[in-house]
Image 1 (cartoon, helix red, strand yellow):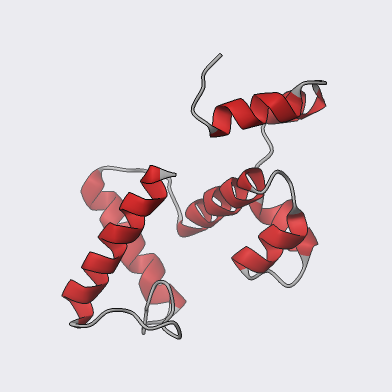
Image 2: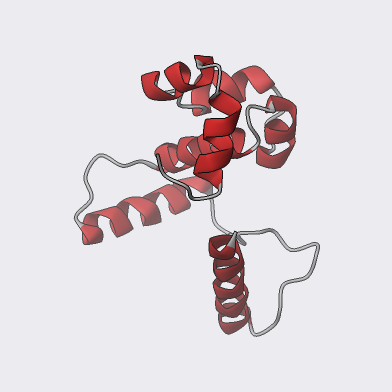
Length: 124
């Protein structure tokens, strides 16, 4: 998980640069003192500047939720606590993106081994 460590180090450095202090345990992960509408507008502006069309904030949330469920090997209860969803049905029905490839992979007898190999960076 070196990429997570690197991301965390970058996040902490950015946080300290922006707020002049290290984050406290009670601080939100992504501090935002604006409305969701303002966040969505800022996100759309950033996409436009980057030349990205058709991407919406909810797509990022869905991608994150999908990655969490996948990383937790389908443990919806843990993923629900991690993402903050009260209802697991909402998490799975609205945010989780099950592709046909993932579904087929889950049904293979050696799915656990394949998952472990992918997580460790081994390619087939």
